[in-house]
Amino acid sequence: MKAEPELITIVEGPPPEFKSADEVWMYSLIESSVPYLISLCQVRSYKGQLLMERCQRAWSAQRPIRLDFPTLSGLRKQLEIVAARHDKLPEGDLLNLWVRHQPHDISDNSPRRADEDEDEA
Image 1 (cartoon, rainbow, N blue to C red):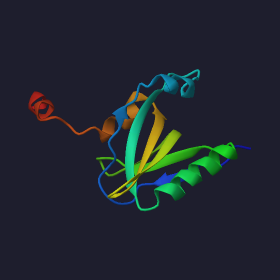
Image 2: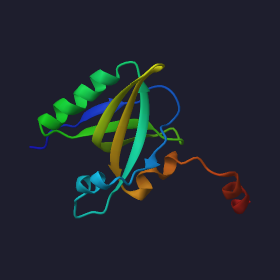
Image 3: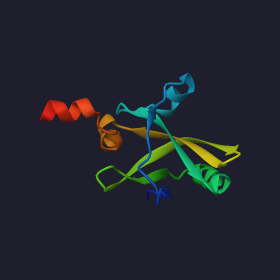
Image 4: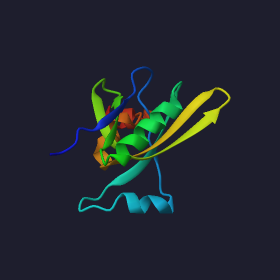
């Protein structure tokens, strides 16, 4: 029986931004029969340490953990979190989440450039 994934849900604020991550250690996270990309998403939270502990508990129990977030179109999407790091900053907690995805999985979260709109006109 497949374990239900744990969720970290972004409830408020704009959709998250995903930055391409290509650190060498990440290649061990994407071994699969399907080619994946790894992107970094930074999330501010008042409970960064608790969210980090939730990730660690899920991974210890060999359960997947997913980031549930809004897209620019207003729909919700989930991506698998494959690594996490908590940083304490003067202005609050920052949770760095590395997510595994296909290229089309985050295309709805990429802001459109002005020149793209002109090309379609």
